[in-house]
Length: 402
Image (cartoon, rainbow, N blue to C red; front, top):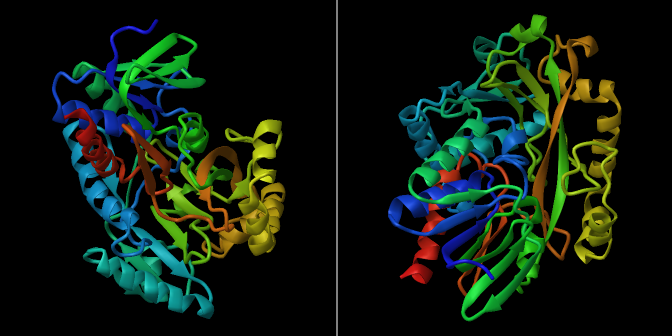
């Protein structure tokens, strides 16, 4: 039998789960809380494999959850890093238009940025682009001063330390495999035994929809894992990129396109692309799960997505398998880049919510049930916005905690 119930159990020790735990511990001293993390460490998947950018809030529809949480979360993230001795750098970034057809979208980005309160953003001529990034090329650009870089693994781990210092517990190797209700409590089964909790928060990332269904909540969407592959620029060519260089994104998709990022932990990465993974933690072409693939095939939205975006999908797959095609996309931004200037690096997997109609859902999704909160979609900029998201979820949980 489980021990005395926890007040709150959080499934998932990525940056959103840890930020939520931190917000609860800080606002409710004495709260009995536990984080249940499936892997042997925090930040094992999306948090630990992203590009480490502190996003400004440029891209997101004004008034959306993404926009509000990104702007508030960015400011909170910079403060947190300063207060906790975590290196974080205001680098700014340049968004570059390389074709006349991209100019209307660039103008819309500038408008959105201003509506989201980004001060100091400004349009750039080709000459001004080169003042910021001497090796970048474009017909127009946008400079966004609020963007920065940080190692989110350090942030995530610090969140965990604060949780533990406040009396919270973190259990690793604790993948939740079953759920039931008993005498008003939730009973969660994990390899380390049964855990009882009065309130449940699902921050399971790539498995958030599966956890919701296990808990009796229909999510109304399917997590579709998209693998993002990176190249790294060889050290002798680091001078080609000073900070961050982005393309104008295709507004039809919730991805930003391959870009250049100077990393907080050193080096320069180029990418990511967006390729459907055949496993929820599918970091390579060889990673395959029959269960996950069957889940895609039996979800109507998968086929509708395919009909809408098949051309893009095949293009991303080709670029994944063909280094020259990948580098050609990068060379649009930095023409001096050569094939031999980059080598394959790591990959991440993004948990992208897919609707039954085949839509790639672009905003955060948080669903509530009886003493349950399910974070079903928290794509980029979730790491940037994590402190703000955590406070939002903690506020929702307050009505269950009294």
